[in-house]
Amino acid sequence: MKRLFAIAALPMLSCEIRVLTYNIHHGKGVDGKLDFARIGRVIREAKPDIVSLQEVDVRTERVGGRDTVRELERLTGMRGVFGSSMSYGGGAYGNAILVNGQVLGSRVFPIEYSPNMEPRSILMVETRPYRCAADIAFLAAHFDHRSEQDRMAGAELANLPIGLPAILAGDLNAPPDDPVLSVLSEKWGTSTAAESPTVPVDTPKKQIDFILFRPKKGWEVVEARVLEEAVASDHRPLLAVLRLIAR
Image 1 (cartoon, rainbow, N blue to C red):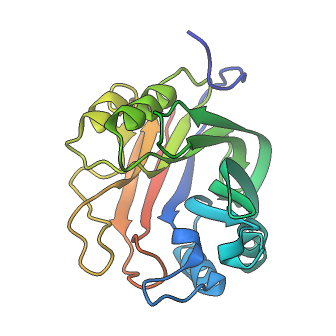
Image 2 (tube, rainbow, N blue to C red):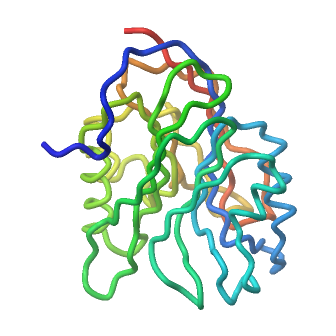
């Protein structure tokens, strides 16, 4: 089977990293304000080593031509990588990853999509976070909310072989009991043992944002929780602390 990323398997080394996933709604809060500083503050206060961001605009009209990734780099002090899913509003729209550490390589994997559906993708970065003694593959994903077929295509893409310990974080637009999560569970473990609602943001009732990891027995979940942030976006952020353990 074809590899997602052409990287050689390495022995696992212990490390502990704080992972955040956040659908930022292009920076627009539920109060109608476009406020990158507020998004940056949410990220900084979570003290993550690595962040998966969805609904990220780069130089689109609705963000006034600004580069969201560069703005968040400045606001958080982290290094940013953008992965475009499609052209939109005079710029691009997709996923981004912020890292406190080295970025050793990156690639965007388009998800096969149905006619009249929105293009989606998985952004993958090979990285070594500063507080980690091992290289890992980190995947940021945003699956389609309208088409189960397209979500399943995203899950099957994410399940392809990866030659490093890996984390998949993002808005999967599917609850824990959805068939898409069942497919992902063939390869990935989850940081949230019980449902951890992330939407709607004011009174969350459903979890569609996840932090997953593989190999399943290669990681230990130290902590996982939804953050108490209900204004900056239409999703709540999900934070997990994961420990990479030796086989």
